[in-house]
Length: 530
Image 1: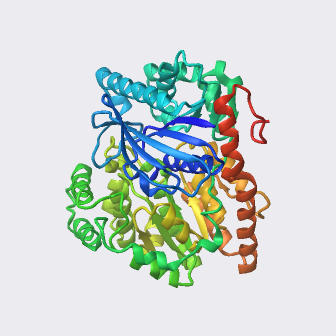
Image 2: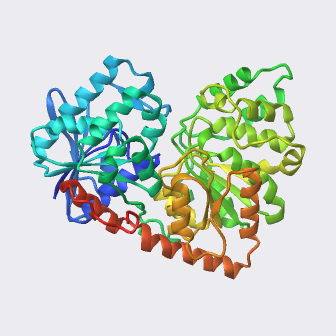
Image 3: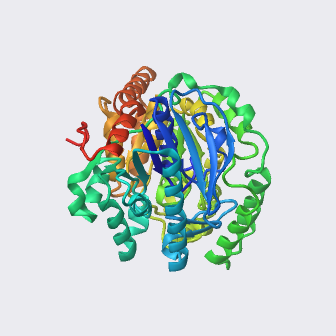
């Protein structure tokens, strides 16, 4: 099948980016010819990509090509969009002027849509695609509907969730744009039953054409025998955060005045964050990771964005409560605008700097560039400060690792945590941890509840942790209970979650279902949609 697909972003760094990467790889592996529009700059570094093109008003220009080992193919096209990248949640993107959709002017939005419509039409003409897939509900489906009008080519729309939560639900105009685009889709693909329910709530007339297809794990890449300590040799040097930034943070907190304000502290941390490239691993990540891998102490792992809504501050609270009982270490892998806030929180808790801890806790999102608001599910108490004393020595933030490196590190963890406090479409990180034989604990809400149910089936405990009451305490209790199990029992748990991930969440069947939905209005039955 010749399949056209749109995704306005990159192919790594976020859940939806990784999802699209793996979907294209799986489709090419099944023999399909995929024609993807996205903004990934390093396309030929991906094994499934055959050709790299730019699409502009002058037409299509080939930028490079290479063979791939797959029976199908994937050609990728970068639409020229005048350097402005609209996003759902603000972050810095090197080489781009990023603005949230909610901050776009009418002219900026109309120009973005027009450029993409023209690009889709150009790629359709070149590819001869007979079906199409869009990613995200704003504005991908609307772009596709306009571009395919009159062609007879059907399209299915994958709803990842963040665009509904962060954009459409906050704007009547964007909600109508989403409704218009999704109304033209032959099928709407939700990544969990929770996400399907959200779509039905926002668009009740579209519920009948919505199908839930959870999963999407590369169980060949993420596997227990992928552990390879030699990967640390490739994680040295570079423009990421280094020891100088760690030392500078210590000086900032030690010298911070009792009269200093939250804005003063946020300003200091902002300057600090501008001194390194956040999307690259820390300059000394390899050294610190090797130290963890060579140690026999259990490792608790977090992988994901470092923003307030992901709940890493709750994990820090939980870790403070359990570290002495378990001798565990905490490894935090990821990047985001809240990183320096989390690093500061870790150091302030560790040194008993209550003044800074309270400023951080009371102003939360201010330290990721948002409005001041208290950290959710986080309470500063004497007991927490006592438990946290000296804990910075047991916590490693190493910056982001991308899939090739992450898969070789992940199996070293004893347990993973997905502590997000904001609704999630599914829980891809939890599924990837499970595929690596690492049991994940997840916050008990939204699509995470569903992911926890899939990977945790058959375990002697519930992987889903209640947010009610003290989430940090609940999470700490769950972690301590698991780490107290005998080694043989923990090994049995590792085998269970691996088996569940392979049987229920692998890409093999999922990609085939999506391809069929892209060329047909017929809804396919799946265990999750019955």
